Structure formats: C-alpha cells, structure tokens
Length: 191
Image (cartoon, rainbow, N blue to C red):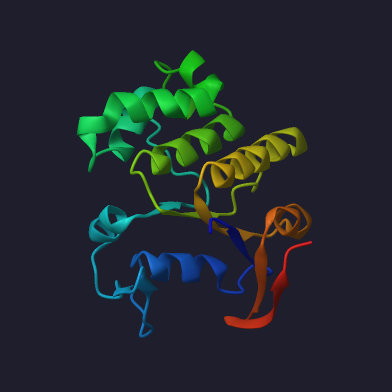
C-alpha cells in the first residue's frame, strides 16, 4: 500500500541527518534496507537507481539552469522516457510549464520547491523522501504543496516526509514518528 510516513521533531533533533543517512550522503554505522536489499553501503546514484529520491531541505535547484534543464538533470538515469515524464510533471505543476524556459534562480521559493519535487520525481522513484517541503513558504503555497503530496500518494507514490509543521504533516500522514535528540520517542497514526 502507498502511504505517507512523517518524521517530526524540533530543529537539531536529527531528522535531516536521518534522511541524508538513508541516501548515503553522510556515513553512518546503521543499516538501511529498501525493498529487502541492504543499501547501506551503496553510492547515492545507485540508491536513486533503486528507486529512492530525495527532495532536500532548502530546495537546492540548479539556479543557473532553466526549469526544463533542471528536470532533465533529474532524469539523468532515465533519459529515454524524458519527454513523457516531463509532460507528467507539467500536468502536476502547471506553473512550471508556463515558465519552463525561466532560470530557476529567478523563481519564487514556492516555485523552486515545486521544481525540486518535480526534479526528484523525474527519476521515477518508488519512495520519495522530502526534507522540510514547507520551510519558508507562505501558507497558501504550503497548502498547494501538501495538496500535491496527496495527489502523489493517490497516484501510487509512497512518501517519507520530514517536517516541522506538525499540524500539516500529521493531517497528511498515515503513520508518524517524533524524533528527540536522534531517537524516536513517540509513534502512531496521523491525525
């Protein structure tokens, strides 16, 4: 079943480190298993090929590239299906289609977040990891982002969401965990 799992906690609790450890951006002594395979020692690009994609905190789009070029970067491991995937992203994010030739660095924060999500989806992940997708965004944009996340799960995507905005995250989640000082202290269903 497709679902949304949320990890919430205060700044410094270890949420981002957890995500970075999953995709092996930081080394850890722990073990990560995905679809019954140990990916703990895999390189990040191998993890992406296995079906995990990370939307990092702070968006980290390629500011000197256009929206279209950013999407192409996300599809580096699947260029054969690029046009179909790009058109799917434009259907999901119509604003990106309108501005597809615009430099990503000139976009608003909300538009950059949409682009970061679309770029990650271009790798055709089975599991999408999102780190603070609402950070620094206006309330209306946060509502749009969370609606898109709902649509993704309705289309069969599984999400692992790290978020400080507990109310929005818990309303969206099937399961949730609370992290305090690097340890899970509470768990349960979403609201």
